[in-house]
Image 1 (cartoon, one colour):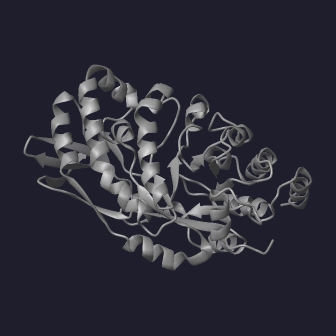
Image 2 (cartoon, helix red, strand yellow):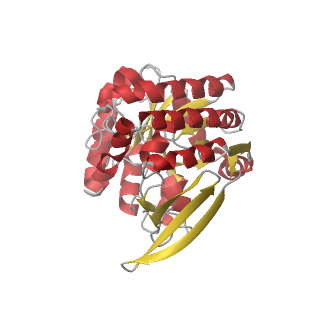
Length: 380
């Protein structure tokens, strides 16, 4: 097979078609720029970009930001003044936020909320007003610019926000100390009302993404079988995925969903979804589902591995051994790609070691070929 570009490899895997080598890439949003990154890209690592295809305007709502000091720490408060009430959230922003990639701090730590937007039942009315008065408009310049800059070095994807129920779980109510589940039990009508409003509000957003020039749409989320149990997944997530996929597929777009948690209790339900790419799949030791089993269960889906950050903590030698073990689970290597990380910065040493393994992963994979890769790296 003629040598493929990085973009061609990633897209071949996304469509379940043969590639010359196992595609691997980093995400721009937390990739270091420098000698090691340049070296790894020269050795075959791709670069993927996530960019929004839309702008968002909230009508009839005044948004005010203020600061206060608490125990020497700056707390940023964002207040939403609506005609039906006022709600706010507080957050801490580590050094570097707003000065580096994707609203991350210098150490790759994102802002974290110390007080959630929804604190009690009285706050849902204002939240629903915000949702009902949010307008989405197409803006494809960020996508077009990134595609022009990136060329054949990787893939640019539409970035969509978390699905409606995960907006409540992760952003607005929060799941710490079981908060969301208390609200879900105590105020089910309020949860349902906001969920339905957000589903309706997001309809134009899916059409906007479907018509963008990017070949893949990443539909937010952080799916984990403990946070999103099978009952919740089937009731609140699968219908949203069905709706998104119907619109995206009608325009020839592939649909990826960020599923980076423990997925074993959801495998049978995930197999029923129209999702094309399980993005950020974390095998053990961070996830609870082996790569081999995932590939066998999801025969019509592509898996993009998010390399486990906990293995990186053990150093380059452990990184090498774990990647070799994953290759031995990968069958022929089709329907598979490896993201160097989907969440965190990767050290130069680990980035180079993972590249040293993956640059040699020609397809189709065989155990003999993997043994040869291992022998070639014995002294590295």
